[in-house]
Image (cartoon, rainbow, N blue to C red; front, side):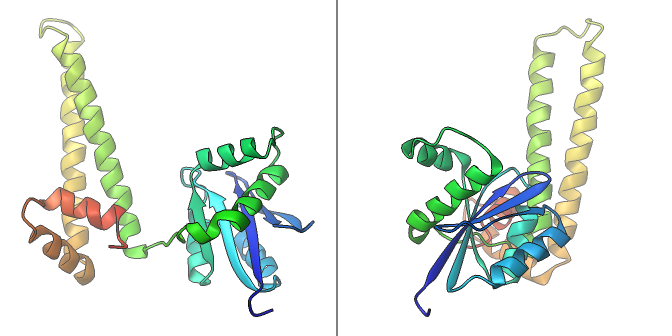
Length: 218
């Protein structure tokens, strides 16, 4: 059994996780919460050989699964939905159910996992990532409001409303910038990483934060 490998596809939704082991009839469904994932892990522990898990990126519903898989030292790969859609199309699989999707993920894992990297979570960077992404959302909102204001005259009744919104968004951005600085300053590891990145010519505060948050593996 030393060289035996097991490939497991996990279809992730907001409420459920559907597990399918490649080349088997084993299909299980678990709630997508801490207790459900613990039960899923118990099932996985009974599987023989080297185990590889694979799921799709779902905009965050897979986050807890990935974190708990990492904590259990399990290899988990997260791929983009378009890759699975293309694979299913190549297999001429047109029906869609959670069980079928899990099976397609398991087959994809079996055939392509050797070409893909495991997805790692970095707890220190998780909060930082949420903050920087929220900041980017607010910056986009500020630009959007500014563009609308350019098309108006200051005498227009609605101009003052947009102006208030812009000031409000700017204050939210300032608050997040303060949080980012305090968060980095409060952790020696993040502080050293940030100082090192800023020592590189052309990398400022915000760019250094984004690199730490979005590319912690470097």
